[in-house]
Image (cartoon, rainbow, N blue to C red; front, side, top):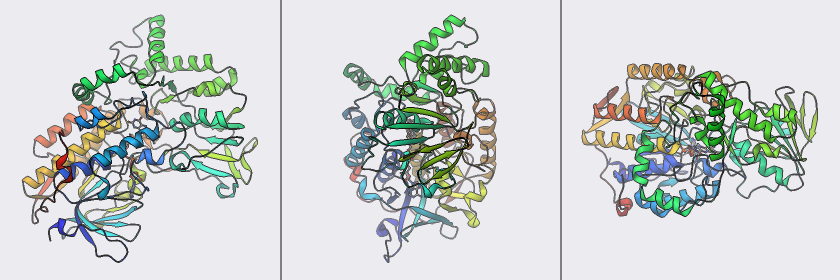
Length: 565
Ligand SMILES: Cc1cc2nc3c(=O)[nH]c(=O)nc-3n(C[C@H](O)[C@H](O)[C@H](O)COP(=O)(O)OP(=O)(O)OC[C@H]3O[C@@H](n4cnc5c(N)ncnc54)[C@H](O)[C@@H]3O)c2cc1C
């Protein structure tokens, strides 16, 4: 049966339906994937657990949430018209602004009609007899698809620590990544924030302005650089828009998907005065380009320590209480090996009379109580507790789905000792299943949108290739997968990342294998590898000839879209 003739979703007692592709997730990845596949004429269904689109930017509504890659870069590049017509207002867009942007994208490309919200994919099983995936959702829906594309997000499976007494707390519990749509007023409240990673660092200064008292429960301090956020200068925006295509092309070739001036000098070859001046200049500019102040900040431990010590000196210069300043100074890991934070007045917040830093490494949280929280050495009365405890990164969202490939083999079992994939895109034994920004690809090591677009385009080109060659299945070979996993590991071993207990290596989740999850070889180099593999007829993949043709292309709403890459 041609897939497009039965592309209705089963709800309740409706009959099962068949699609060319099912996409799981409607964030930046899922939306662009939908757009591309529809342009190919495929019948597509997107399932999204959330009540609306946006992914990260739907869920993370906490006050202060914003991107830390400049807005002009943290946006799609695939449509010239889109990037020309959209107006970002600030250097780093707020969560509401990014959500408005994604809404606009969905309207412009008429995406909503193919997305089913409030529907969680619970299982997907590959049927070797038909070479199709059976997809099951939490509402009892069952559909089948030739391709399944996991656009489930690297940072979407929320981590809530399993504190003793969690449910006994009678105040309000909040998680930064599950923030209520109606917002939260902290005025006059005693608030505890647990966690001082990127989200904690963004939310803390804002809650401090409202709360009667804010307790910040810190286990490991983060390195944070100032954002220097500001309204965008119209002249800068015009100039960027004039040269956008060229700018984006160059960004794709860089290490992190953003153009930043990388100083070719080693931090160790210059005088202390020159070093200080260079760090200070980047500090003034703000943002993550601080990591590129010298060529070896992320490669050499001693060079890294000079940058780390500079940040510590800024903390000491900002925070008036020397004991608090010392407690805020990270010492246990090299700078940048946990995601570097970008803040607005984070360190200054600790000069407020209504803010107390609590070191929960020295005195761990023992339990939540009906009235607050108890550490080993003290009790804190709280009205609200905010968990800024992050995510079960990369694998969390995938493992929440029971994914079964050939011979009913479970992905979770296959990855019990750490993720194994080819290019972070495809998994041996799981034909026609793709992971956008999956483990083993650069993903969070840079501008995620650049990596998302690259994966989406690679996948849609791959599906086009299969169709043109009347092929039914594509599957990574075990050998290619083994070689890629070794390569990812070998590159990781040349970096400083393994030295930190970060979510990059799964250290925030008890029992998670310690593996550097993103690929550290650089966005530009990775793209070239992927392109070369495709150009060689998908080297490292097994391609199977078709027994079934693709569906006849349905009329394309997106045919009205003017120019696309
Ligand atoms: C607070 C925050 C700030 C960030 N800032 C930046 C930044 O400045 N720069 C940057 O490059 N990156 C940033 N990131 C990373 C960010 O996640 C990516 O930039 C990007 O938004 C990821 O898009 P995505 O579509 O791949 O995943 P997501 O946006 O995470 O979307 C995945 C979607 O899949 C859905 N889903 C998952 N499992 C299922 C299931 N089983 N069934 C149905 N639906 C499911 C989820 O509900 C979610 O909506 C940030 C992340 C966070 C949390």
